[in-house]
Length: 144
Image 1 (cartoon, rainbow, N blue to C red):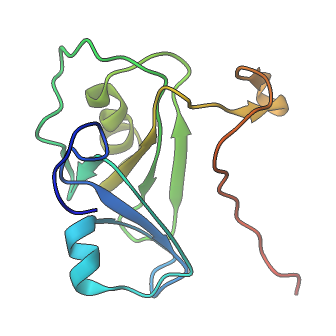
Image 2: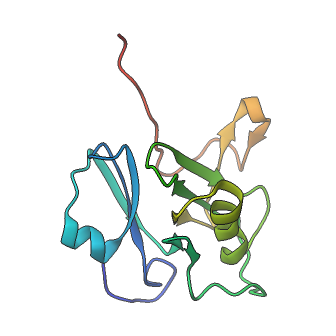
């Protein structure tokens, strides 16, 4: 979807997380993705973009009262690393975008979800709302 609409997903620009192409990981604005049509083994569209070419999404307000547990993905400038993050408390889009831009150094980052965000990670002593989850992204490698 590349047209503006109601809700977070329609807050343009939105984007695509792509892996398995010429760069291991990419976050690309949706309209640019449609024009470039990069090779991807896995791609998922979501929105809004959190960080676009090193800048926070222009509609994010530092004093917003919209706070949720949020999750998303950011990519290192060289495309070699993807950072998946979920907040441990309710945060604004502005705060969450700054994690990726200022904390991790991502030039591009994409919001995945908010109100239904969950993490099950026993090693981190975290089990949000039990074990029910939505989509899962995992990375596996081949044995040599």
